[in-house]
Image (cartoon, rainbow, N blue to C red; front, side, top):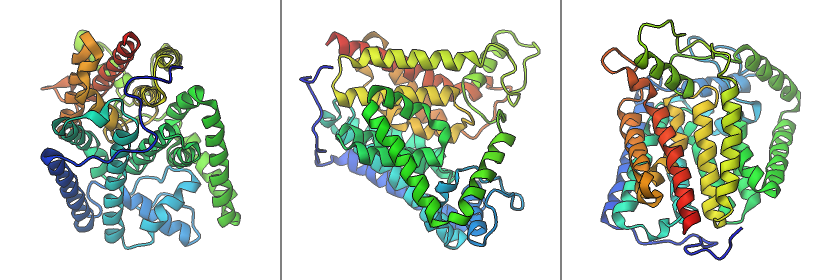
Length: 406
């Protein structure tokens, strides 16, 4: 691997004085955090998932199972160790806990974006005030919906972004710990750390060690309940395996939408039907090997920071297109990569337009139309975000090829 690369990233983050536009975007993030906290405090049960987490913590502290359905709330779907992430907010009043959860999730995502820019994103230290403010704007637009409904995607995304940044800074144990907590919050995003571990096996070993440590420590804190909780979570996973909802937004949604537009009137399966075509289950596996091979090939000419960003973004693209239970709020995980493609789109040569278009679709429709359902007036609406991720994937490969030429 090339080590003496022009524009190589520093081991320590560089603090630059923000310009006027950047300061305005900082204020925009602050206004968003205040608005989210106010909404969760005044209307704690309206368009919010936090009551599910709050009820799970309350049930657990009362000696009951957090995996039982409470009233009309959705089921708690996260592994037992994740309860420790929810406890600081779940022990509070629903309104106060929700407001604090919203603020902390927003700040964690923002911290992850800033850390990536300081430590990892290629060329980001030389961005102008306009480009930096655009990066923060696109990041807020893409992640806004995932934060607004108080899902765990904010906490998940922040942990992943910080993990990648710490990996670039050559702090593998910190990186492994952050990624371990992310995996224990949502194991379905396994594809991303698997790609990074294939590139850095030593980091993968540390990740496994940190996963084991967190599971053991959290289990020892409540030894009598630990085994029972894991059994209940596994049972819940079996019951919901293969489940699809019409709100899912992945490659399957994109395929059905395009097919219906190309050949309307055919007997296509509903969006909630799980992979009704025999050939689809083989596609994610083939694309996983393609992403791995492409990542390995392209990163041979890159410095470690650029390689980590490319592999993390490719893993995120695969996860959003083929991972289970992908909804519009889940696209928060692509916020830094879509913002990067938008700001640095010209670095992909002739395919620069793919990065620009991916950022526009992700930022605009992801925030404005993310909660709308497909309708006769605009059928492609349900496929908008998968299209953005497809364009991002093309831009990433084109960007990698340009780095090879350089």
